[in-house]
Length: 134
Image (cartoon, rainbow, N blue to C red; front, side, top):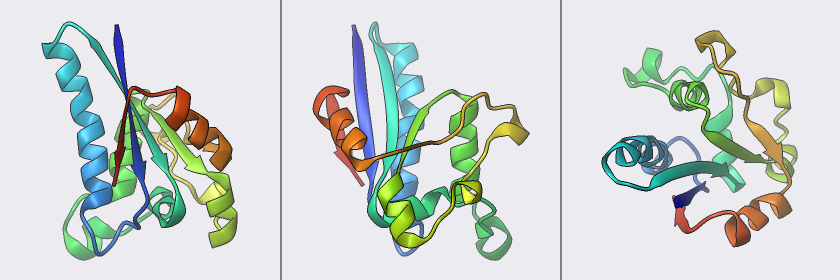
């Protein structure tokens, strides 16, 4: 049996630790998977201002001395984590797909999945056993 957990990130990558918490919680699912008899399958979904977390070349480490959200996302992509980004919110904020995080430089085989909000809602309704909002 599999436990599918959807982490929905609605907040931008600044003024709150919630977006980073979503990523670290999703990362911890792989550890939980090793210690229980059931598979734990995390998915991250970025909606609203949360899509700002997915922009590449953030300078958090350089400016603030902390690992940037885009580095965390790259690491998730190398682990083949499914990451959804809301297309309508990207358009609303004027973000082009080429500005999104790409984990290829770390050896990732996956990219972020730009999908419609309808597809994210479907994932909420049918694709997960547990839903967490950040």
